[in-house]
Image 1 (cartoon, one colour):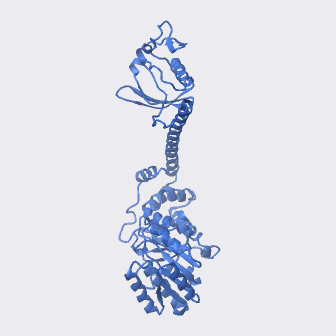
Image 2: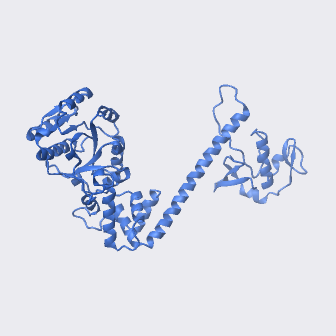
Image 3: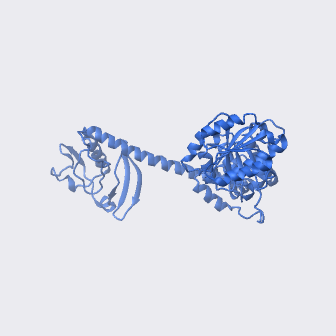
Length: 440
């Protein structure tokens, strides 16, 4: 009837299973016998004091009479009027209002209120399922429409395959390809893509805005300040501190640099930084706690650049919060070190755990070890992170560089050394599979 909406149906061994909504109240799934519905005659139904029964039948014989569509609707209304009280089941096509079982209340609960609450909960569950189905179908239709458009634009599809093969995320890849001008040749499309990526990365750096060449910036450490390098174990914080200190000392003198290590867990890290400090003629001091760190900052207040090396803590370790709290001292500026060779999910975890969006910026380490830089650059773009520099080797200080976005994008889009440029590029079927799996 008009008050009944079928939301799901499927064939079972016993018949047909339906899920419906009547007046906003979900009906419980019940097996319906199609052979009974096909052969049983439909008798007019009368409303009596005891409920519904077929005309010409004896009271109490309703259980033997199959329901029609009209009688089914009347049956549901009758159930609602009686506030979902139990009623004799009818043979043939039948359905029962969904009444989710819940533990008996410890105290007296009004029957009407409990029934309404359970009805509301069941309705909410069905509506949530319907919303999920709607979103899934909308995503599938959008994917089909996008691919239909992409087939008419080969340059767009070629760039999409390239971006996915270079480990950029499906969401960013699809967004970039959607912005590609329609009349570009392959060479123009490649140049446009690299320029767009480089300028997007540079837009997060205040020093790059308005510059003649917005794809490269000077090292943020040249301005001086107090910086604490933080990140998981093994990302290269200690070596990066030494590289930055060495470059600054060569330009401004060793007397303008001070080094502090707050890594009290690894004695080796302290000795490594002390060795670098001795070579540079820069003192290295150990801060065992927050109070000692504040005292050392006061001691080195006349130094233009103070670098703090911290203990490596996994992004999933609860001590990350303690570390961030210990460094919440004026004028310390936190810098998150990201390992460019990490997987995309790990990079995102580190950026989130160390609150990279609220930090002074990030550094990319081990760029030379990354097979693809796409994941690292994708993380920077999606989180709008300010890149302060990158390291691409173990040499001190030669292998630390200021942020050069055009160079990094070029490395990310190039094929890995020793491979064919076409290796790893995806065909259209693989691209479709990836996008559908990502629901984009």
